[in-house]
Image (cartoon, rainbow, N blue to C red; front, top):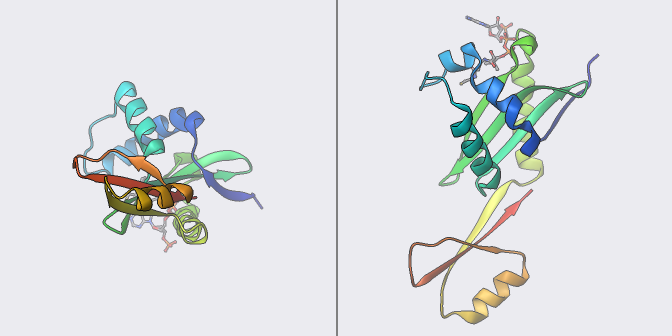
Length: 151
Ligand SMILES: CC(C)(COP(=O)(O)OP(=O)(O)OC[C@H]1O[C@@H](n2cnc3c(N)ncnc32)[C@H](O)[C@@H]1OP(=O)(O)O)[C@@H](O)C(=O)NCCC(=O)NCCS
C-alpha cells in the first residue's frame, strides 16, 4: 500500500501548484474558469506562503506530490480549496486529503492570534513581542497590530 503523507507546502512547490491550478478539470470546477498565467501565479503563490491566515499542505504518495489542500482563514472561518493530481483521482484520495488536512489544522492548532494595541501602549507592545508576535501592517495610525501564527 502507498505511503500517504501531508506536509506543509513550500517555495519549491510553485511549479506543481501551477500545473494543478491549470488542470482542465480544476479550471472547469472553479468559479473563475480562466487559465492562470505564470507570472500572476508566482505572485499569488509567494503571497499565500507569506499570508499568516493561509495554511497550505501537499499530499504525497510514496514521496510524489499528488494533491493540495489550502485553508484560508477569514473571520474565524477556514475556507477550503483542494485538488488532486489527475493521476491520483478515482481512488477516494480526496476524502483522505480533506480529512488529513483538517487533522493537520487541528493538531497544529493552525490559528492566528492577533492583538491590536494602541501605539503608545509600550508595556503591552513589549509584552506581546516577547511572546514571538510580529508586527504587521496597520492602516490605522493609532494602532499597532501584532500576529502570531501557530504551525
Ligand atoms: C474533487 C476531487 C478531489 C475528488 O477526487 P477523488 O477522491 O479522486 O474522487 P473519486 O473519483 O474517488 O470520487 C468520489 C466519489 O464521487 C463519485 N463521482 C466521481 N465523479 C463523479 C461524477 N462525475 N458524478 C457523480 N459522482 C461522481 C465517485 O463514484 C465516488 O463515489 P463513491 O464514494 O460512492 O464511490 C478530484 O476530483 C479533483 O481534484 N477534482 C478537480 C478539482 C476540484 O474539483 N476540487 C474541488 C473544488 S470544490
